[in-house]
Image 1 (cartoon, rainbow, N blue to C red):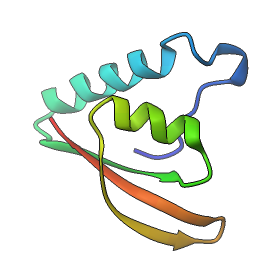
Image 2 (cartoon, one colour):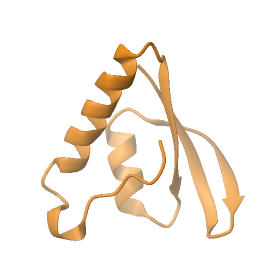
Image 3 (cartoon, rainbow, N blue to C red):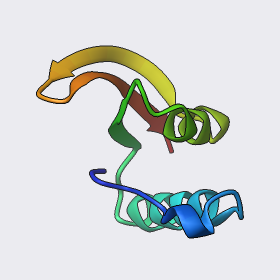
Image 4 (cartoon, rainbow, N blue to C red):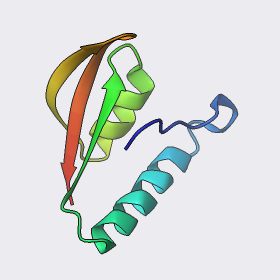
Length: 75
């Protein structure tokens, strides 16, 4: 998954969680067994969302913007 975001005007309303669940349901139906993504370590809101929805840290990567945590969720 790449570039998942919720407009600040709509954050903290469960939209991110609902969209994640919808995406996971769709890709599980396509036969995938896991979802992988990265999140900027300086974005506590994204990291909290992913961790609270079952994504587990698998490592880190340093890219142009800085340090990112690599996460995965088994479906």
